[in-house]
Amino acid sequence: MNQQQSQKVQNPETSVPKNAQMNERDFINDMLATEKYMTDAYCTAMNEASCDHLYQDVSTLFNESQDCQRNLYNLMFKNGWYSIEAADQQKMQQTYQQFSGYTNQLPYQ
Image 1 (cartoon, rainbow, N blue to C red):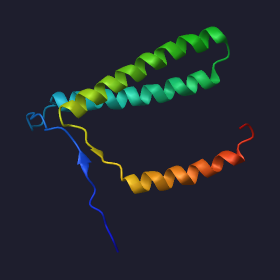
Image 2 (cartoon, rainbow, N blue to C red):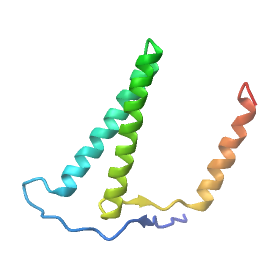
Image 3 (tube, one colour):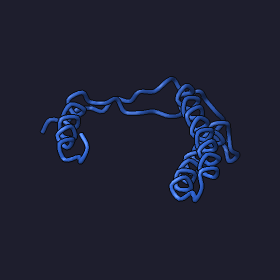
């Protein structure tokens, strides 16, 4: 069985105090989780909005929350507090081929 070692993409970690009190990393991580929750809630609200004015207002809030979420993610990644796995090129190609075959099943092409 051929197992490839997963490669993490991460910046050097900025150290923070490790004690019972919340540190900068904890606060930013909490804010990121909150923004993720809020964008999900705004998305549901937009799907269920009963009038265009309400939809536009919620859409504005959604976009602001999404931008905030992205900025928090970038800050965490920059400080080495958020790592991602490097994509395996072969797996990406296989997935692309798998899903590109589904396009002929779509009603509008």
